[in-house]
Structure formats: structure tokens, C-alpha cells
Length: 358
Image (cartoon, rainbow, N blue to C red; front, side):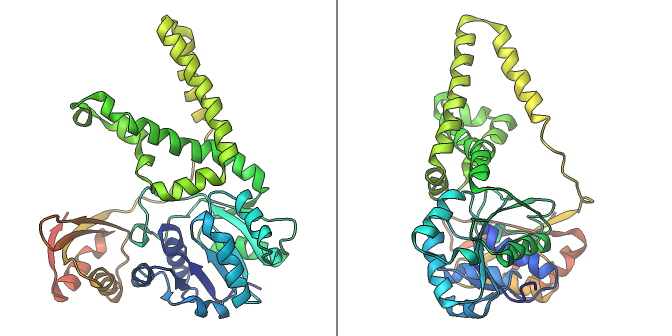
């Protein structure tokens, strides 16, 4: 039996995107809960579900914990005491420490299936969410020895409804792999970006696409990534040690002028990257960006999203640029080209000024 009512705790990028993806499939509006009531309201205005409080989760059939890893176990225990029948899952980037923390608190492990959708963006928060975030993605489930068949099935169902493909593996296998393919790139990107001052005053001006692409992950939330790094600290430390050994060998080759090891490193990287699977791509969609000037005051952004929803327009991406000297901000909305005029008319009718349509 599939869940009829889903609850989502945490309305950042992942939680909001899950809600939007479920709504896209026509399911009942997920119950959205966040310690930041404004974030939950924004997610609801974006079409991710209904904003509520923890008490509203008592009637949910499956609850997804889209919160930082360090908060998962305590939240799981509290909500399991509130709701005695629901199954639970999470979306954290580390699994073994989350499971051990939950076991240490004596959570009901039969109703919990740890999970991790392999999807994300550098920007966080509900305004970065998109319903297509999980399309063609892998959604890893790492059940413990006590996880029930129902809890596992519910994770598979959520993944499928969000457009992803669920796979199961052990928490240790997940953490070992993620240390190399996710956590190491994050740390290395931050290390490389941190060296920009060594380039001198001209460095930022001369930094081209290569530097920007390589350091893209450095824009991620440091607070969240501290939790992820420490939650998977042993595996990440091992991956960093192996990386450091390769860097040291490359440094020696460069100082000695030996071209062969340098070429070998570059060739190995090229060959290894060729091992990555090619994901299926959908037909490209043409986007149009609208710029809307909002007053910097509570509720304005949520009201803008509500206007878009009432107009039947799906907002695909959002970027916000606050004016430092004025109490306004420029909100850039990406929508399908065919919907741009409809949204522009609705926004103007609501009293806002549309700066650009490009």
C-alpha cells in the first residue's frame, strides 16, 4: 500500500523539490514543516505542498527528513513518538553515522529507511528548488538490518514518483563511494577556490571558465558541509590521503621536469571521467527570464509565487539580487518561454514592475 499523505520536514532545496515533484505527479499536497516558518510558506507558495507544524505530521503515512545530518536522529525519535504508524526516511549525504545515531537514541528502526537522492545544486533554499531535480537520478536506500519491507517500499515509491531510480546498498558502501565522488570534490573545490588570493590582484579578473567550473562547488553552504565531512570523516580522510599522495607525486614530477608522470596523471583523469554514465536527456526547454522588483519586506516573495501559481505558471528557477542601498530587490524568474507573457501580465496586474523579459 503506497503512502497517501507524505510529510516533509525541512523545506530547503531537496525538501521543496521533493514536494514539487510529488505535486507534479498529482499526489495530495505534502505537509511541509520547517523551523523557519517563512521557508515553509515560500515552499508552499512555490507549489511544494501545504505549510504546517509538527503536529500535522501525526496523520502522515511517510515522513521525509530533509534536514542536516546532525539533526536527523533526534528529529526522527521525536516524530516517531508523535506518529506511531508512519514510515520515515531521510535525504542526507552520509548514512552510517545517521543510522548509528538513530540506533543509539533507540529509534524504531523498523520504520526508518535511510536514503539519499543523488541530486543537488550549489544554491540552497526553497527558491532554488525545481520539480525536475530528481529526473533520471539515483535515489540510494540504505536500510538497516531492522528496516521493514514497508519502509523500504515507501522509499522506492517516493523515488519513483519523483522521477528517480531507487537502488539499495549498505550504508558503508554508500559512504565509501560518496567520500570519493561527492565529499572529496567539495573539499578540493574549496581548497582550490581558497587559493585565489595567491594569484594577486589580477586573479579574479583573469579567472576564466576553467577556474569557475572547477570551483563551482565552493559556493555550497559551509555549515551543512561541515556536518557532512565530519559525519563521513574517516572515509573522507582516506580519500584525501590518497589524493594528497597523487598531488605530492605530481609536484615531484613538475619540479624534476619529468613529463611522463604529468602526462600519466592527465591521461588517467581523462580515462576515468570516461567511465561516467551518460544520462538520458529530455527535449531541451526554452526558458525566458523575467525581472521583478520587490520591496524588501516580509511576505512579498511568497505573494509573488502565489500570483504565479494562480496564473498557472510554473517557475523553474529563481535568483534574488538585493540592492544594498535601497529597500528593494530584483527577483529573476525563469519560466517556459510560452508562459512568460502570461506571468508578466499577472505580475503587472498585482502591482509590480517587470524590468525585463529576455
